[in-house]
Image 1 (cartoon, rainbow, N blue to C red):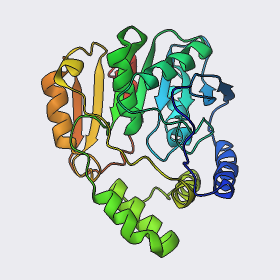
Image 2: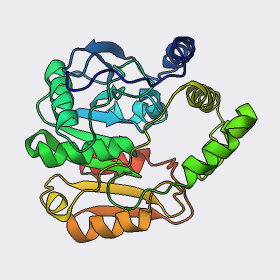
Image 3: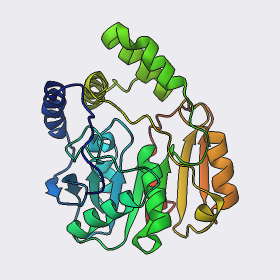
Image 4: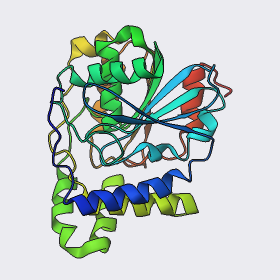
Length: 291
């Protein structure tokens, strides 16, 4: 193992509380799913597999301080076309190992090698969100033969990371649940998605996570021009013009300038939370604008 387990929880009780709630949330997964824990050099990794077993593979990588349930609103659509593998990232609050190898090393690529090998997947399309978008690009740069298409939601690693979220979180932490809600709304740049029972359950889980989980504080390494210029998988990136965590305008500029054939959609009035993009991503993944 390239890294020892990190202290990612405020207490063992906090971890147990979050994981118990997570198991409840998994019952809301909208399509049949096989729950698997696969062995990797970084420790056990939890994966939800949905969709026809003979369909093309699709790997889903969620963002920081999140879990595979970030895809609750998308998976039913994508699983009609793909064998979808929603992965709990290592070092995050899901059911995978709490290891956090150095960002920028090849450890995450080797971890994803282990995950895909255990799943029997050779090459795959990847959808990545925020931190997961950074991991998706990092893997495509290091393992171009294993990535067929990339769809990125507010990906890190292109523009400047803003520190305003960290400051807001520190200022509002003493105010309990109210402070956590204000912090999340500030970070996401949108009202919390509580308009459906599943959305409310997901928000409740996020609040619980942020009460007990210690997120990563280091900045994501920035991809250099040579790495981006070497990307060959078709890329769709969707970014919010009012993203308070990442400089989405710089992301758009670097992707359109440096990545051959990249398609970048900037939603001018949207923040870091990008809702309603399921169909647009499906069209990119299938290569069918009518999807």
